[in-house]
Image (tube, rainbow, N blue to C red; front, side, top):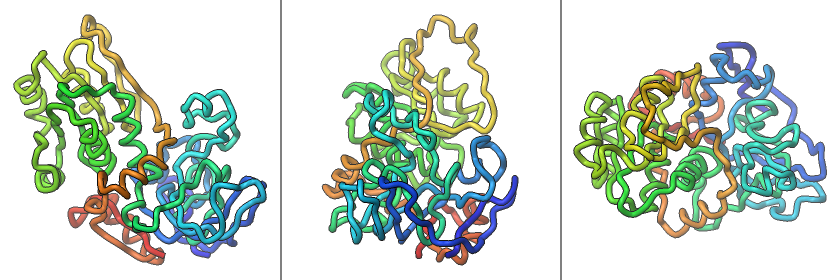
Length: 344
C-alpha cells in the first residue's frame, strides 16, 4: 500500500509498505477513506517533535471503514464507518479514568498515530485500543463532516470545555488557522457575550468574517486595543491561544484581564518565556498542554444535530498519490488553503 513516510528531518516520501496486521486483541485495522494534513505533521517534518520516529507513516487526522478487529474490540465491527482519535489511550490507568487521556501511561499512550507508530496518510492503519480510539460515524454524517473529529475539532472542544466560559464573558481566540476555527466553533456553543478572533493573515480574517459574521475580527496590531474597548473589566475574561508563536503567547497574557483564564492550545516549535515579573499581580490562571480527546462521540452527535459544521474548512482535495503536492500547498499556505482532504 502507499504510505507517506517520515524519512529524515525535512524529508517525507511516498513509499510502499505492507498492509498492517493485528498485533493485539484490542487492535483494529481501518481502511482509510479520507485523511488530512495537520500543522503538527509539519512540526515532525522539521524536527520539532523529538518523539517522532523515523520510518513511520505520518498523519493523525482520518476517517475510514473498519476492516478487521481483535477479539476484545466490542464497540465497533467490520464495515463500520469510524473516526480515528488522534490519541491512543488504554481507558484503565489513573489518567484515563480521570479524563486526562493525553497522559495515558501505556507505552503507546497519547499522540502515537503518525508520530511514534504508523498513522493515517495511507490506505490502511492499525489502531491500538480501538474500543477507545474509534467512534462510529452516524449514517447522516459524511466523511467530510467527520474528518476533523479526532484531532483539531476535539482540540477545540477540549479548549472550550476547560476554559470556564460564562455567558457574560468576552472570549479572545488568537489564531484563525484550522485549529483556531474549530476552537471558535466550540466556543460559540458556550454562547459568551462576545467573541474576538485575532489573526495575522488577511485571507483567514476574511474567512472568519464571511462564515461567522457575529464574531469580532482583528489583526495582531489592533488586538489589545480592541479587547480593552470591547470588554468590561480591562481585558478578555478568557483567552485561548491557538497560534503558537512567541508574539501570540505574549499577546495572550497581555490581553487577559486580571484573574482571567488563559488556555494554551498551540504547539510551539521552540520555548517561550513566561515573564513573571511583568505579569505579577494579574493572577492569571494558565491551562496548558495537549488535547484530551475523549469527547468524540459527543462531537459527532453535535455534528449530526447540525450544531457544528467544519466542512467550509476543506478548501482543497487530492488523491493520496498527489500528497506531496498537497503538502507543498499546505506548508506554503498557497491558494488560500485552510485544510486539505486526502481522498482514497
